[in-house]
Length: 329
Image (cartoon, rainbow, N blue to C red; front, side, top):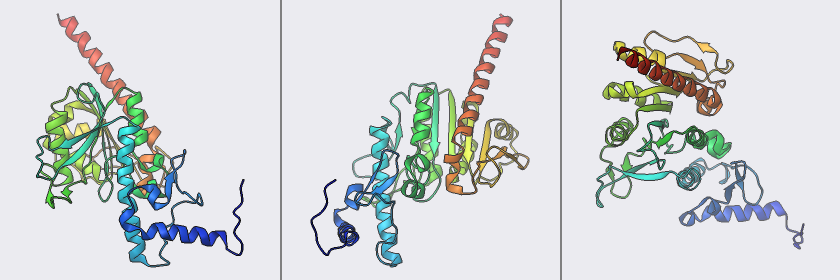
């Protein structure tokens, strides 16, 4: 290992000056590398020089500047995750509305190459706030790892099991360039309805599974109310610390919520411990963590056990129906 031939200069001071120099170049921050960070092989965000985790306080206690710096890093994280969705997971970016013109604001989703032709598809819906497509928690991505905070593990597992994939982008409701709301995605719920009606309903999907975090549960439940055929097509909904409200007294929806939907909630109880829930709602299970943002990460194996179990039920029901029809003939 080569040593630096510098006398009477503290190495930590050099690092500090270098890092502060990067931070001060606000207009030039186009990538994680410009910030002085990269993700390592374990998917952890590390300082290029020190190999230390992200440091929030780079402006000596100036909360406003530190927060601005953090938010700017977050926007770079958004772009980095988009890149991983396309390059690592091989998803396709689809502009919406589908007939978006050049002079209006547009949003986008991501989908696998076979999403429109697959009979079995998986929808991923994040929560509210700053997160964008491909993320469960920006904080976990920055402070822990891509495995903990991104949707990439769910996408890869879904692809392995033969699901077509749709990754929604429900918080992208306003176009900064045109300074207008995005048609069809004015709100997170509008976004879901547009994607369901204009894309998923026109695809070959006959069997749908959904994983939705936090406010994504509200979007899912209201989506089922607004799109009755969704109940028939969707065989499994895994919610992670959803904040949805109880549905109206709709017996068909209530039966679906009880049999096809499960909510892993933040709790200090062990993973999968059955928790109390009210009549008309879906069963509630412990996610094995009291931290809201960690629920999708910590409940990963349990979520997939549930989805695969419901898929097996779906196939068995299909075969039973076929045998009955053949017997009637």
